[in-house]
Amino acid sequence: MRYIGKSYPIHDAGSKAAGRAVYAGDMELKGMLHMALLFSTIPHGIVKHLDCSKALALPGVVDVIHCFNTTEKEYNQYQTQFGQDLVHTARIFNSHVRYVGDRIAGVIAETEAIARKAVSLIEVEYEEMAYSLDMFDTLTGKIDGIHGTGAVFEGGEHVTGTKPEGEGLVEIHTATDLSRINHICMETHACVADYDRYGDELTVYSPNQTVYGIRTILGDIFEMDYNRIRVIKTTMGGSFGGKQEWVLEPVAAAAALRTGRPVKLVFNRSETMVSTYSRAPMHFDADFVFSEDGTLEGVDCDLLLDAGAYLGNSLNYARTVAHKLFRGYKYPYCRFHSRVALTNTIIGGAFRGWTSPEATIMFEHNMNMAARKLKMDPVDLRIKNVMHPGDEDPLIDTPIGNFKAEEALRQGREHFEWDKRKEEVRTFNQENTRYKR
Image 1: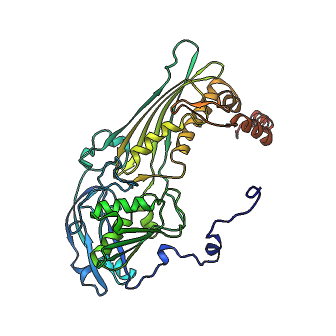
Image 2: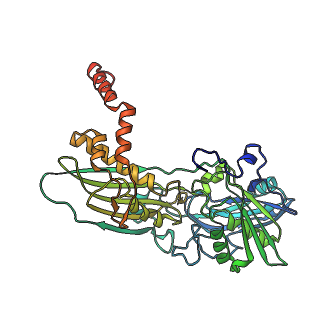
Image 3: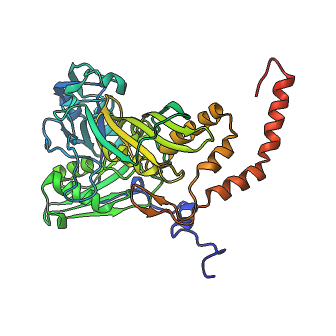
């Protein structure tokens, strides 16, 4: 028993607790510059003109890079490997801005304070365009021109088994809406990039979940050999999916390549919430079919996902929900269809659980509504339909292992004193007319 019952703290726990750990935002390199960004203040439009003269005249400002003097190479910030099949529409800086928080320009200066002051001096002239803040508005064609690739994407359809038909079936329909959620890591997004002009080598320091993903995307954007790019994962102050897509790294790299000096870019809390990405809002329309005794016979589900202004990982994310629908309950039929709609809002992305929480919330909500309609105890309904050890996931024809959901439900009901509490609620409701539980 070398591991069970033993305490093995993570390797950097001591330095973090003592305040000795060095995060990307703590780094200081010789000759290092600092960067601050200018974000769009409108949800959708075209940048017609940028006047950076006042910013450039401010003492301590080294350069201003923006949508008109940097590469127009398009990429997808979710890219994690070479040759990945993704829709590329994002740029380091954008003249066609698509949400409040879209990047327009960046000031490179001797200090962060100077950089932030200079950003406030840049003047922007916009041509405003129609915008959509709601995925259902997008379906009407309101912003079809947001990208050349369109605004609505099909995620595909998965069908398993034969749809149940006949008498004695009970159909339960639910609509489940999940809101946008930000990761709120204690460490905001940060990155340091350093370019050695003489050796033609780019080094990037950032808290991230895929160093090779960053190397791949930077090599593709700047047309550099991968062996000229080194990515170092710094001490992580929280991610939960919030640092597995590349937001700051291309920007800081562009600044380092431009100046030939190290450049640090650190977002404050507001910038992290407005201009990185969040868990995507989702709308589920689900129809579950039960036999009268409570046996789940089939699931029919349509998902609409709000990707925000750029597609990012949203197509992959939406499709993944289908693979989570057979990880708890056993039933003979399932149809799952997904679509993704763009809106003029912050980009949707990965969040802890990779669609397991979203799929589960939808599923359990429908089970609760079914218990009401079938007049069954919600725990009994679940026990009747949960998977058991050795059952297979029909989407991948693979056993789910030693799955003991029924045992967990029975123990949970006992420890929670479920039946006793139900009786207390029933008694309370009978005795009170003003308040109900």
